[in-house]
Structure formats: C-alpha cells, structure tokens
Length: 338
Ligand code: GLV
Ligand code: MG
Image (cartoon, rainbow, N blue to C red; front, top):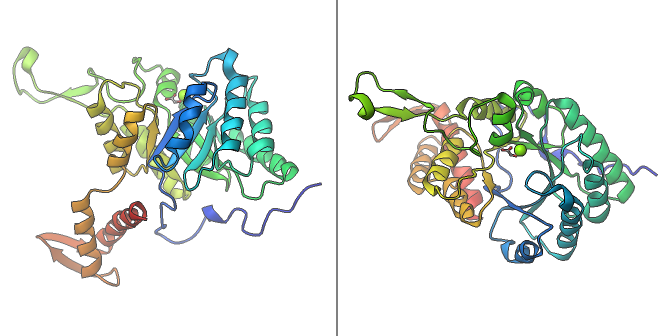
C-alpha cells in the first residue's frame, strides 16, 4: 500500500522560493569521498572516516569492474547497515540508467538501507527525463519500504547533451540535491583531446602578446572547465541546488588539484570529490573560506547592519551587493565552525 509522504517531505529544497538570496549551504559538503565497497580493506576504513569527511560515497559505477558490481552493491549495503554515520552524509553512485546493474542497485539498496541513505548520485545524466525516471523509482521504493525521509538525487554533468540541458536537469525534481562536473566522461563525450581526469592541459592556453622569444614566449594555461562550471553553477543556483567540481585524477600533482578546486570554489562550487585520502585535506582547505576574507566580510556586515547603502572600507566601495557577497562568506564560515 502506498504511504503518504510526510507533510514536509520535499521542504529542504524549496524550489521556486521567491527570495532573491538563498541561505546556502545547509550542510557542509566540502568533499564527497569515494570508496570502492567491494574491497574489504576499504570497507574496514569507513568507520574511521566518519566525522573526518563531510560525505562518504560508496561507488558502484565506473572504476568498479563489471565482475565486481554485485559485490560492490552488497558491500555498500553491509557497511551502510553496520556503521553509524552521524552527521557524515551517506551517498552511493549507482550505475547508469541503461546499464544491467542500475535497477538492482536502487531497489536492493533502498530496501536494505533506504532510511540511512542521503543521496543517490546519478551518472551520465542527459536530460530531465533521466532524473524523472529515478525520481519516480525512488518514490515507489520509499513507499514500498517505509522510508521516512526523501532520498535526494545528485546528477553528474558528464555528457555534451547533459551540459546542453543543465538548467532543465537542475529543475527536474524537488529531489535534486546538486550537480557535479564529471570531466573525464565529459571530455570523452565532447571529443576533447585529453586523457586526463579533470584539471588543466599543458597545451590549452594563450600566448601573451609578443612577450619572450621562441620556447620562452610567455604562455598561460587556461582553465579547461571554466565554461561548464559556470553553466553548472548558474543552473544550480537558479534552482536552489549545490554545484560541485568532480574528480581530479592526477594524485601526483596536489598543487594542480588545489588550483582546480580553488577555481571551482571561487566560481561558486561548494565542494569536490576526493578519490585519494590526501585530497580530503585539499578539499577541506579550499572549500572552507579564507580567514582574512571572512574577517573582511564581517566588517562589511557590521558596517551596513540593514544591508543597504554604501560605505568605504579600506578604500573599497561596499554596497547592497557586496553585503550579499559578504553574507555568503560569513554563512559558510559559521557552518564550518559548527
Ligand atoms: C566522473 O565520473 C567523470 O567522468 O569525470
Ligand atoms: Mg564519469
């Protein structure tokens, strides 16, 4: 028998709320830390990671071999049942919709641990229809299994068509939690000429006009992902969702990882994936606001208690718009301090 959803079932997203400024984020999600649930050694580390990372995600999709898909699903269920996750988010990345594993991923996991699961990450989303399908499937399974809080959907933006439809994807369901950039699949889908997982490319840049000679001519590498991150952030903010940078695959280059995450943070992303334990600290550092920036932001809020007018602080003009910028920073700092 169908259960009626609780009255405030979809409340957290408040889609279409008319306020020009939204109070985000509501939970700290600076890093989505991936673990492969079919590997016992990795499952054993999960309890120690609770409280150390903002989100723990059991990965069932790419990077899990085809012959380990069932074991990964079973391993995720085992660890989800056994561990108390406290304030740490519990997510899973299911296989894509047209794969042979997706249906069991969702049905078995919701049946077994639906009340502990916060978010389902849906890969290779092409348009709102993909979200609609998972939305209805989750609704059926929640009702069937007595799940009392809505399981949210997080889409990966990793196909050319998905980027074309990003706003419609963001608007597709009140279950939408956010969107992550998937630079590896997106590069393949677009026919980009790179084998890297996120980050820059040494040949993607601009020459500074007439500076230097030959090999020493000044060349600046540009951010390959700028356009997509900007589109993703705009779509997310329009519909009250959170935007994330995805994976950074070169574990030998922490500086490049930090630089890529920081670009995403400055453009409005709230977090990124961590695929290696050392990326947890990088994400924590980058996606927590800089102390000096927060102190300056506080000065702005204090100088303009009602958020209107114009004042000068340290030679810089402040007004209603910079008050809102400052509030973003101070709100994030409060969340980090909690
Ligand atoms: C992530 O899934 C990616 O394809 O980059
Ligand atoms: Mg991918």
